Length: 126
Image (cartoon, rainbow, N blue to C red; front, side, top):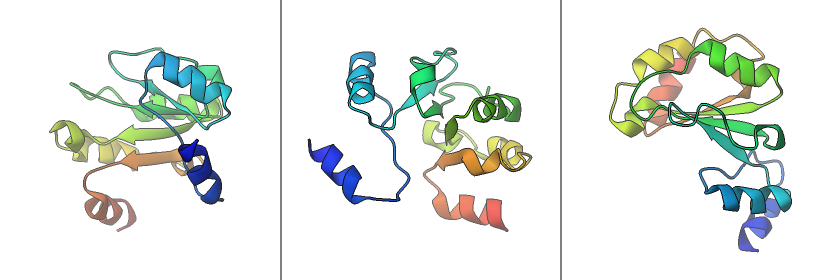
Protein backbone atom coordinates (compact mmCIF):
# COMPACT_ATOMS: atom_id res chain seq x y z
CA UNK A 1 0.00 0.00 0.00
CA UNK A 2 1.44 3.35 -1.08
CA UNK A 3 0.27 5.19 2.04
CA UNK A 4 1.97 2.65 4.35
CA UNK A 5 5.27 3.03 2.45
CA UNK A 6 5.12 6.83 2.60
CA UNK A 7 4.34 6.81 6.33
CA UNK A 8 7.20 4.39 7.05
CA UNK A 9 9.60 6.69 5.18
CA UNK A 10 8.44 9.63 7.33
CA UNK A 11 10.10 8.16 10.44
CA UNK A 12 9.72 10.38 13.43
CA UNK A 13 7.11 12.52 11.75
CA UNK A 14 3.78 13.07 13.43
CA UNK A 15 1.09 11.76 11.08
CA UNK A 16 -2.34 10.18 11.22
CA UNK A 17 -5.25 9.26 8.98
CA UNK A 18 -8.66 10.87 9.51
CA UNK A 19 -11.98 11.94 7.99
CA UNK A 20 -13.05 8.67 6.44
CA UNK A 21 -16.15 6.50 6.31
CA UNK A 22 -16.71 4.07 9.20
CA UNK A 23 -15.82 1.01 7.06
CA UNK A 24 -12.59 2.68 5.92
CA UNK A 25 -11.77 3.55 9.52
CA UNK A 26 -12.01 -0.13 10.47
CA UNK A 27 -9.62 -1.08 7.68
CA UNK A 28 -7.05 1.51 8.79
CA UNK A 29 -7.39 0.45 12.43
CA UNK A 30 -6.98 -3.23 11.52
CA UNK A 31 -3.85 -2.38 9.53
CA UNK A 32 -2.33 -0.52 12.48
CA UNK A 33 -2.41 3.01 11.10
CA UNK A 34 -2.58 5.91 13.56
CA UNK A 35 -6.24 6.95 13.25
CA UNK A 36 -8.05 10.03 14.56
CA UNK A 37 -11.79 9.81 15.03
CA UNK A 38 -14.04 12.82 14.48
CA UNK A 39 -16.09 14.69 17.05
CA UNK A 40 -18.41 17.49 15.99
CA UNK A 41 -21.77 18.98 16.83
CA UNK A 42 -23.17 16.24 14.55
CA UNK A 43 -21.00 13.46 15.95
CA UNK A 44 -20.88 14.07 19.71
CA UNK A 45 -19.69 10.52 20.45
CA UNK A 46 -16.55 9.75 18.41
CA UNK A 47 -16.61 6.41 16.59
CA UNK A 48 -14.11 3.76 17.80
CA UNK A 49 -12.80 6.22 20.40
CA UNK A 50 -10.89 3.63 22.45
CA UNK A 51 -9.11 2.27 19.38
CA UNK A 52 -8.02 5.64 17.96
CA UNK A 53 -4.90 7.61 18.85
CA UNK A 54 -6.59 10.96 18.65
CA UNK A 55 -9.69 13.02 18.03
CA UNK A 56 -10.32 15.32 15.06
CA UNK A 57 -12.57 18.04 16.54
CA UNK A 58 -14.65 20.06 14.10
CA UNK A 59 -17.27 22.80 14.41
CA UNK A 60 -19.23 22.91 11.19
CA UNK A 61 -21.93 25.43 12.11
CA UNK A 62 -21.30 26.65 15.63
CA UNK A 63 -18.45 27.02 18.09
CA UNK A 64 -18.90 24.30 20.68
CA UNK A 65 -15.30 23.31 21.44
CA UNK A 66 -14.05 24.51 24.83
CA UNK A 67 -10.78 23.97 26.69
CA UNK A 68 -12.70 21.53 28.91
CA UNK A 69 -13.61 19.35 25.89
CA UNK A 70 -9.99 19.32 24.71
CA UNK A 71 -8.56 18.60 28.16
CA UNK A 72 -10.95 15.68 28.65
CA UNK A 73 -9.56 13.94 25.55
CA UNK A 74 -5.94 14.62 26.47
CA UNK A 75 -6.51 13.30 30.00
CA UNK A 76 -7.76 10.08 28.40
CA UNK A 77 -4.49 9.78 26.48
CA UNK A 78 -5.67 11.16 23.16
CA UNK A 79 -4.04 13.70 20.90
CA UNK A 80 -6.35 16.36 19.51
CA UNK A 81 -6.47 18.05 16.11
CA UNK A 82 -8.76 21.06 15.83
CA UNK A 83 -10.31 22.41 12.66
CA UNK A 84 -9.90 26.17 12.78
CA UNK A 85 -13.18 28.05 12.14
CA UNK A 86 -11.95 29.97 9.07
CA UNK A 87 -12.02 26.67 7.17
CA UNK A 88 -15.81 26.87 7.50
CA UNK A 89 -15.98 30.63 6.81
CA UNK A 90 -15.98 31.92 10.41
CA UNK A 91 -13.64 34.09 12.44
CA UNK A 92 -10.94 31.93 14.09
CA UNK A 93 -10.02 34.38 16.86
CA UNK A 94 -12.62 33.28 19.45
CA UNK A 95 -11.36 29.68 19.30
CA UNK A 96 -7.72 30.73 19.11
CA UNK A 97 -8.16 32.87 22.24
CA UNK A 98 -9.68 29.91 24.10
CA UNK A 99 -6.78 27.73 22.99
CA UNK A 100 -4.30 30.18 24.48
CA UNK A 101 -5.79 29.39 27.91
CA UNK A 102 -4.77 25.73 27.69
CA UNK A 103 -1.98 24.70 30.01
CA UNK A 104 0.89 22.27 29.52
CA UNK A 105 0.79 19.33 28.93
CA UNK A 106 -2.64 19.83 27.33
CA UNK A 107 -1.47 22.27 24.64
CA UNK A 108 1.42 19.99 23.62
CA UNK A 109 -1.14 17.35 22.60
CA UNK A 110 -3.10 19.75 20.34
CA UNK A 111 -2.64 20.44 16.64
CA UNK A 112 -4.45 23.10 14.63
CA UNK A 113 -5.65 22.60 11.06
CA UNK A 114 -5.80 26.09 9.58
CA UNK A 115 -5.83 27.94 6.29
CA UNK A 116 -3.82 30.68 8.02
CA UNK A 117 -0.66 29.02 9.36
CA UNK A 118 1.42 32.21 9.43
CA UNK A 119 -1.27 34.15 11.30
CA UNK A 120 -1.71 31.26 13.74
CA UNK A 121 2.03 31.01 14.38
CA UNK A 122 2.19 34.76 15.06
CA UNK A 123 -0.89 34.64 17.31
CA UNK A 124 0.26 31.68 19.40
CA UNK A 125 3.96 32.48 19.60
CA UNK A 126 4.01 36.27 19.83
